[in-house]
Length: 144
Image 1 (cartoon, rainbow, N blue to C red):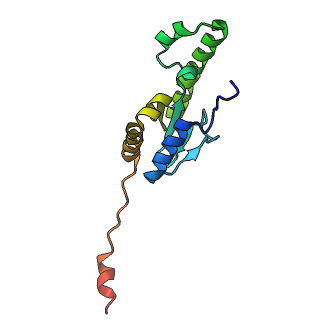
Image 2 (cartoon, helix red, strand yellow):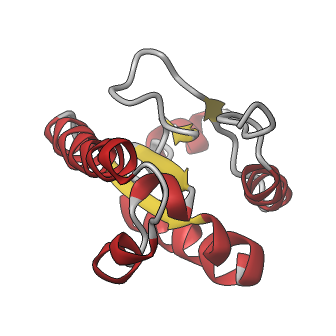
Image 3 (cartoon, helix red, strand yellow):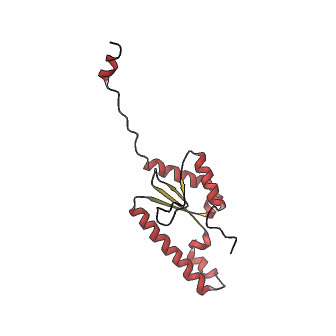
């Protein structure tokens, strides 16, 4: 159990490097946001979590029966984690953020699709550029 990390896991590093390569700048574990997302992109109001399958209840209806040892501890713990994830999602949505949750296996097996999802959501949430046409009168007054 001591070797299990909560920060800087391999899938997180893979996703971070890929986003950085696409010129997406981000914050790590932002304490100002509920749940301290693994990656937060304030410019686009995106909060990205990379969840471990065991700890966050991936395919829980099936996996629940596979837990054999210390069921009295693990089942309530994982269900609490799942409930806390839902609460954090709700708080972030209320704050105007879009929440993206990836499973670790999705990031490691299909990194391109994960990056594309982040890029498409960032493009949707990007504010249109403000274009101010130059003042026509000032253009003609320069040479005179």
